[in-house]
Image (cartoon, rainbow, N blue to C red; front, side):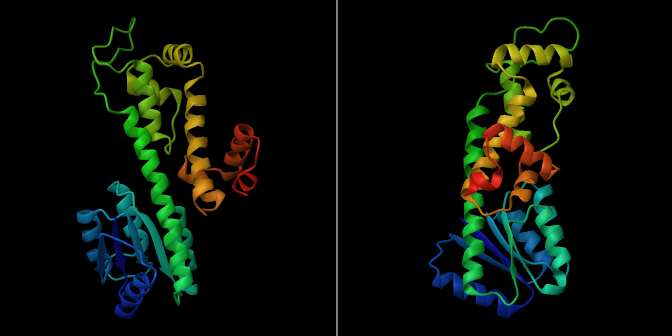
Length: 258
């Protein structure tokens, strides 16, 4: 596992390194960056699993680094370092999927706690990636058309298998029957009927199942606030996420976690 430490203060970078040794964290490689642009160059080249970044750096801010990693599909767990005066930046960073933050001055206890959360988040990501890989080992064939009856697929993947794959890979994004049907080149009503006949549930109910199982993993294995979990699994409105989660599990996210 690779770790990137990005901070324009040499003393902070060295302090983090020293505390990592005390905690016996076994990273395969640790990279140091003295500014945001250097951090982005390392992140793009090495794709570290965990990034510790100051929120304010020359060249590129920590928030810009987070957004750049997202755009490049670098699934790093990101820990943000900040001072009290920069808390608005921290709120933005957390909204953009930062794992947690460290408030200056950084203590050994706060560093270790943040690292444990980041490692737990990476473990969840690894499990979800394996789940996705289990459903995507087969290649695509010729897709059916919107007009007329769908042709017999030449690929081992059926229409419903292709839909399940899409939902597994894109559950964090806004998804509708129309976007799914367009992706598969099918009439939305026909696609919905076909999927429910094969799977026993509607495509959107299947999507909810994926999101709820991912949410359960995050609530069980991390300390990420439930409001942030809602964003991580595709819900913009935390209140709606709480409602769906309770209907699905019979518990509120808080009760499930406890």
